[in-house]
Image 1 (tube, rainbow, N blue to C red):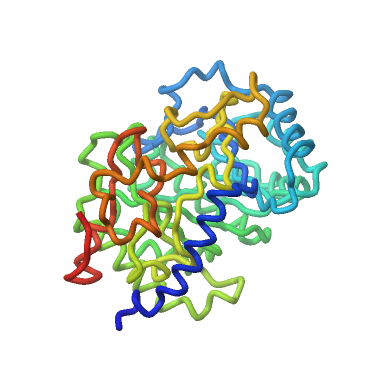
Image 2: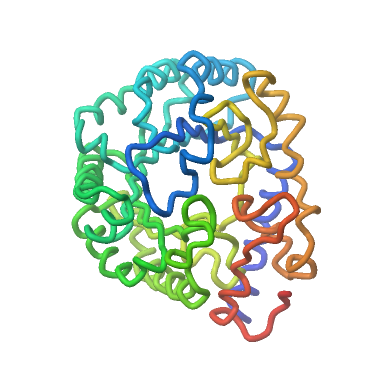
Length: 377
C-alpha cells in the first residue's frame, strides 16, 4: 500500500472539513490589500501599481468603517486573523492609526503584515508600536542573496534592509515568515540561501512560492519556471520538511512551507508544508482590495470581484455572493474532468484561474515524483 492509499481516511476527513467550509463559509480570515502603492519596483510583482487607479484607494475613514461594520454585523466567534498585503502596506501613512482603531475589537488583535522590510529597517521602533495594536506576525520577502535580490527589487541596499528587518522582528518576538519567490533566476541559490536564513535569521517559517505568470512577470521567460525546475524545488522542500519536521513543536524551529501553488496529490501533500493545501479564497477568507472591492486574496483576477463596500453591505455580499468560489462544478472541465484528485483539489487555487480558463495544474508536473500509474488528463 502506498503512502497516499494508507492516508486516504485522513485526506477524506480533511476533505469533509473543506466541503463544510464551502457550505457554511464562516468568516475566519480577512485579507486586506492596504494599498497598491510601493516604495520598490520589483520585476516579478504580481499586483503592480500601474495596473490600477491609485486614486481609488480607500480613505482612513472608509477602511476603519469597513472593519467596524464587519465587527458589528458578522458572527466573529470563529474569527482567526487579518492578513495585510500590498503593494507595500507601510507606504500608507495612516497604517498605524487604522490598526489602532481596529484593535478596539479583541478579535482583530491577531494581525499579519506582508512587507519588503524597508520601512521596518529604517524605523525599528515601529515594532513596539505594531505589537501594541495587535500585530503578531510579519512576512518579509527575500528572494535570494544580495545581488539577486537587489537586482529584482530595482534598488541597491534592499537586501540588507530586508535581512535586518527580519532579524529585528525575530528578536522582538514576532512570528516571522521569510518568503522566497522562486523563479528561474534564483532557484540555483535556494539551498544555500535556506541555510543562511535558518542560521542567520531563524524565522518561524521559510516559505517558497512559485512566481506566477501575472503582473510584471507575465509572459517573461526570464522568470517563469520549467516543469523540471518546479520538481527540483518541490524535491528540496520535501527533503527539508522530512528532515526538520520532528522539530516543529519547538516554536524557535524554522518550518519549511510551499505556498499556495496548488494541490500535489496524496503522495506529496503533507510532505512539503505543515498542512494539507486547499484554496480557501471565498470559503472562510474575505478580501478587501485597495479600492474597496470585495473578493479574496489580492492576486486573484479582479474579474472575480463580488461587490464594493462603498456601495454594498459587506455581510450581504459575503452571505449571498461568492458562488464562483464556493461552487466548484464550473471548474470541473478540461484537465480536471476525470482526475482522481478532483474531490480533494476542486480545480486548484483561484489565483491561477480566469473565469472560464483552465488551471495551471501541478499534478502533471509532479507525477514523475509520485507514481507511474494514476489517472490525470
